Image 1 (tube, one colour):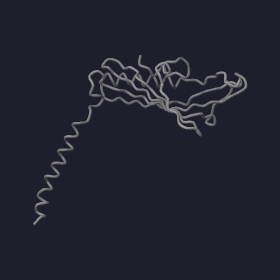
Image 2 (cartoon, one colour; image 1 turned 90 degrees about the horizontal axis):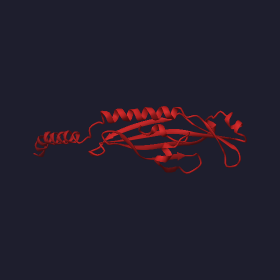
Image 3 (cartoon, one colour; image 1 turned 180 degrees about the vertical axis):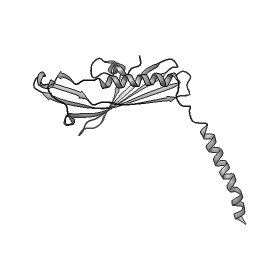
Image 4 (spheres, one colour; image 1 turned 120 degrees about the horizontal axis):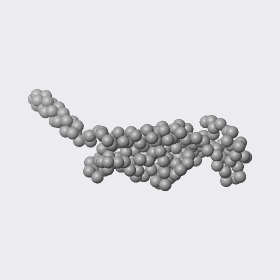
Length: 178
């Protein structure tokens, strides 16, 4: 006698499940579109071009030697998320992955003559920069750098606006909103 009852309830369970799924579909946030994504795409492009133009640089080392430092081409991954806030309707994130290589030489000329290869790898780095969009323009909010050096513990450090806007090869000025 119980089987006919179970069979008659099965359509109700399916209908209830379908109603729940349909209700959840309305919970998703709308896609980020319009000026927010267009202007964040421009920041991403400027950042990518800036990082692609980095050249190896030579600086005096601590032990009286010279250090050549260079960076691999960077992978720049953008993400824009719509929020529920009217003050900050969008939040953006750039994840920048690159490698840092170093070589040492006794003189500046010898350091400049070095061609960096994978054998000179010092670290794998991941930079994460967070931005907010107020409806008109993007603003840099904060950042962090995760550095992985073979044979050492990973390092996570905050990156300040001064670090990002610094002149020279260590800065990321091209990744700031203009």
